[in-house]
Length: 247
Image 1 (cartoon, rainbow, N blue to C red):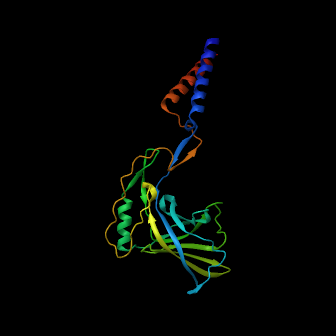
Image 2: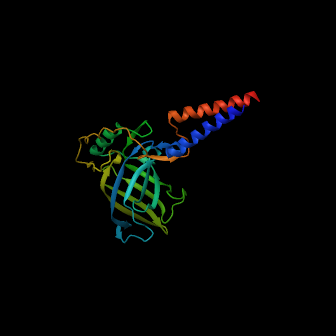
């Protein structure tokens, strides 16, 4: 019985040494569930009642949007550098895209990306349509901060995007020019051409290699042990079970 206790202690100690030697053993990868699209934008101007006005101070700088939630049906709009004024907008209704945009959406929707977690996810182009406010990015609050009742409008040609909102009951519209639309998963930034005059599909995305590491993953607390460590763990648990059954 003494020798069994010694053996078990040695095995447990060996397993602990392996875990300490390899930090990834205490981590697991939780990968993306779709390959979202990103758009860089610049503010063109703000109107109220159809007339140009100065941007109200409540409207903070915004320069990027990405459909990173709800399988591409929810858009995050923020200032990229500091995640400022970040809000999610959920797709409520779609509009028919221009021929060029339709070709672009159809072409990219057929492609998949192999993640570092060894499963494939679909490319999800941003769809033209109406996206009412969903929630605050930071707090998850369902009441918009800073401006009231914001709605994101993506037109059929996707060349601009408009943020409609209210302040003290007054309606405003901030219009942004889309300067670049791209999928970042191949490690490059190639701006797509999806104007209404372009009716031919864009070049297909590059073939995606299997990801290694956590470049597109988040770390969770679940164990992710390699086969050798798992075998050692099984042995330890087996010894422990035998001891309990003999008591």
